[in-house]
Length: 256
Image 1: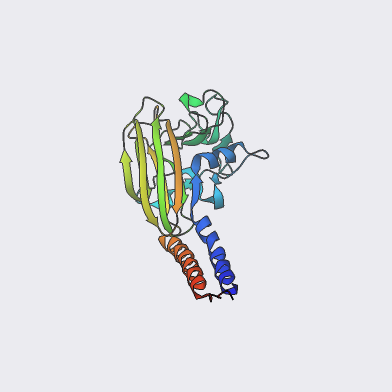
Image 2: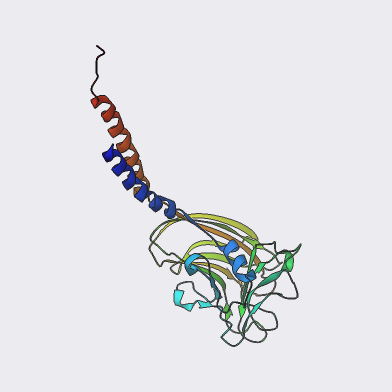
């Protein structure tokens, strides 16, 4: 009996490993909670469990260091609760006369900016000068940094909210793994990531920043390592086998 209790205790200690292996990182839910949290307005657009997500801008294809996180401490950038006159859209923007590049989210109410749904993110590319254009157009970017090594399921969608055409991309450590110019596109990718791997979700202007508002949804799930579940299965099988053997080993007493 003591051996069974000891083995059960060992398996119980292992169970949190399996429980914590399956973690869901919902970019939309996390950004909404971040943007609408009571108290002082956020200054840096880093959010999510452990700060895995960052909202910003930059031409990061082939160059992950080109990413710039939105930071209201940098002149010309702002956190807003009203985006382009819409009271149901808020987040981080470039404070030029067209408020782009931007990563904002529908905060509630019937209609966000340009038909943005409650809880749906909006990513818009743009330039950094006063007019929002200029010689260099920066991509709107949402970045995810893998907190641990393992398998990840990456699911979501890009949705055109305007008449303009955008190039929607996903890059892993600077290399494109998804590209689509369709008005509406979904993705479901399975990637094995090293700790610190960078996933960039990018809205590119495709040549013209006019009418480039793009709705975006994203969920990333860390998949349990097969070895963790195999170990738990061996533990359960071992306990069951030991119990059967213990039953067979019990002496049979004849009645007198």
